Length: 232
Image 1 (cartoon, rainbow, N blue to C red):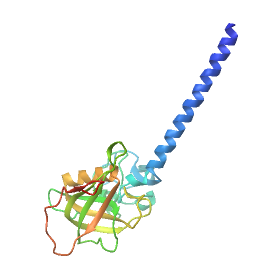
Image 2 (image 1 turned 90 degrees about the horizontal axis):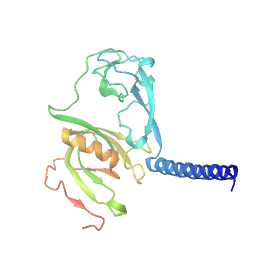
Image 3 (image 1 turned 60 degrees about the vertical axis):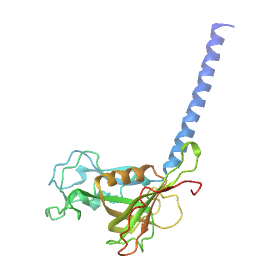
Image 4 (image 1 turned 45 degrees about the vertical axis):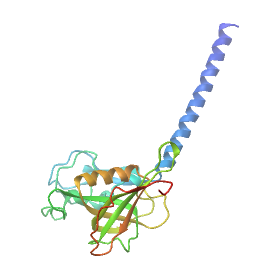
């Protein structure tokens, strides 16, 4: 076989392998896109913002992220924030919401309605917007996927959590966006550890569900109970 023919064959083989690789990458990207679901815009800081700076279009940017990972309180359009001042320093690329703002009139920021050592955790979960109401209490269920395709389990993660704010969640938001039934965006009074757990659950769990508790029902003790796929 001549060198020229050998070179042509090698070039053709390389093009074929390149096409197969590109096709495989495209299939993987499409699968990841289907898994993540639709995306949504969120407003972020274009650069580092000190406390007290007034927000302008030059200081804001819009980033699109999977809707299920978008914080419930994050602003969706720069116009919602123009003219307001930051209440705390904001790092470049960080999400912007009313939690970081002092108000359009530059009024001093008021602290979140929590006690020392507590935090406000924003979640989007399965639940009834009519029953999950500010001032009420809920239990938090977290359903995870199993390993290697096996069925997962549902964990009673938190009990008797106070709801600080709640509203109906837009379609396609939250870890339970693929599940049927109503969803609610809620702000919960929790500890720092519980806030970290809820953030991880929002990102990785298959579903978070809020169960409204009866007024005055302060019984505890079932947290940590998990029911597996076999209902045992």
